[in-house]
Amino acid sequence: MLQDAKARFSELVRRVRSEGPQHVTVHGRDEVVVISAEDFHRLKGDRTGADLIAVMQASPYREIDLEPERYRLPVRDVAFP
Image (cartoon, rainbow, N blue to C red; front, side, top):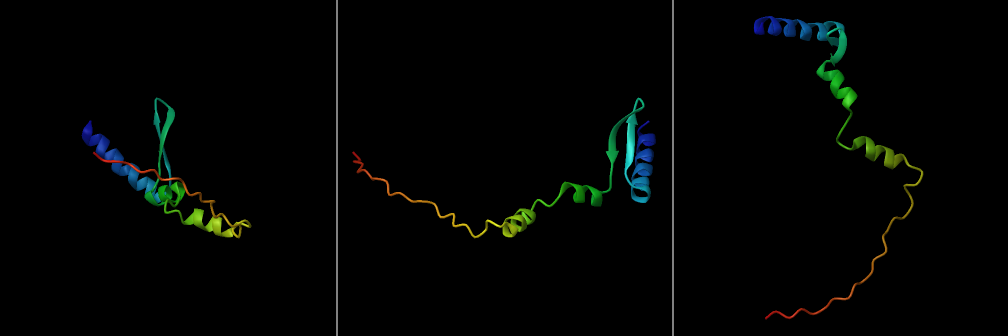
């Protein structure tokens, strides 16, 4: 049984590479779709933050000054024994 599963998995990988995404069914119902690593990375998106930076730089509000107000807080003396 394990050898059959391994052989079928190799076939599945070959079909993903040559034909595109493959649906895997269990009891006649779609359970998962196997896709190439390239498709996965494209769908997952860039997690470096480059897209967020690009959006922020293209914002019409990028010239707004966001300098926070700073308040001096009182400092108290602490005596150490």
